[in-house]
Length: 97
Image (cartoon, rainbow, N blue to C red; front, side, top):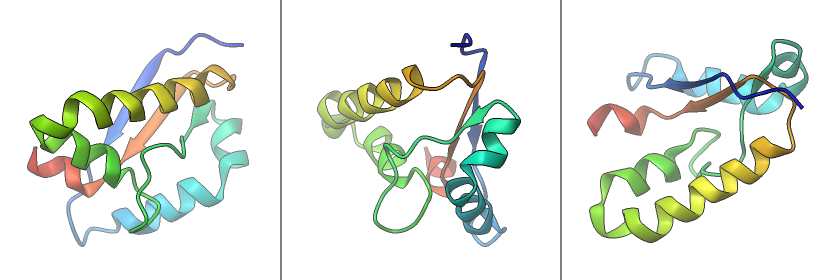
């Protein structure tokens, strides 16, 4: 298992192609793994392949304590099972925080 070296937080502007990138990220784990990148499934909402649930949990202080902690634990659990050096998180919803 490799050491996690970096976290990429992709904060795409609305209507800038972010959803297309998120679809690629979630549908092509093999391509990402070849580049030592992991795109976790925890924090992805029902609205699409972005980590919108994670961004939403960060936006509300009351939800932050419980929901954010749970999502971060889930992401950490996924990352532990990977051999990638980079974790990629993506959501347009981060731009308003």
